[in-house]
Image (cartoon, rainbow, N blue to C red):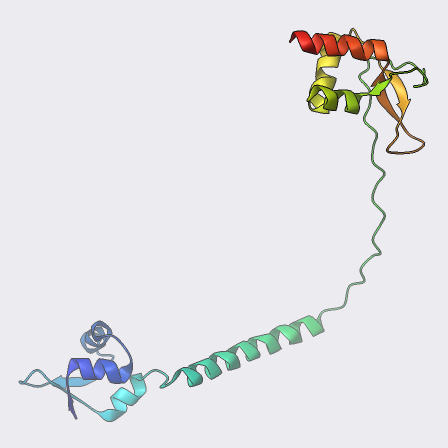
Amino acid sequence: MQRSLTEIARLCQKSERTIRRWIDDGVLTVSRLNNGMYEIAEEEIAKKRGPGDMESLILQRLAEIDERLQRIETMLLAQPIKQIAPRRSPAPVRQPELIPSMEVTQERASAEGAISLHDLARELGLNKSTLYGHIKSKRAYQPIELPDTRKPGETTTGFSAEEADRIRSDYGQR
């Protein structure tokens, strides 16, 4: 049957460029006529035609996916089942160590005006680590151990009212 290149491309659901390449490579058997048309057998078009509609394409793809899933399922069922060990409780959180050169006195926060390192840093508008680094570099302050109000039964680093005032004045000069 005589057809133009455009018609063949439309019937095969391919681009004209692909059809030209197939003709040049001998993938598609056609005869070129003097009028610019091509003589092509209907069987050739049927062989090269892609799926006619989207539904058949989707069904074909679903069948392929289903087959792959069945193979995976077969492989998984063939493997022995591993027992999962019960989850262990997390390791206890290590308490930060104090700076060795800054010995903490055992004095408790019974004194009026004692303040924790955390609260003093917040009051000065600093990060707790920044303040701790400053105190470490000065080595002129005497921290005390305070009961931690957020964690009953635990202690935290703090300063007496006098030490806190000295730190405040040092930060006021900076």
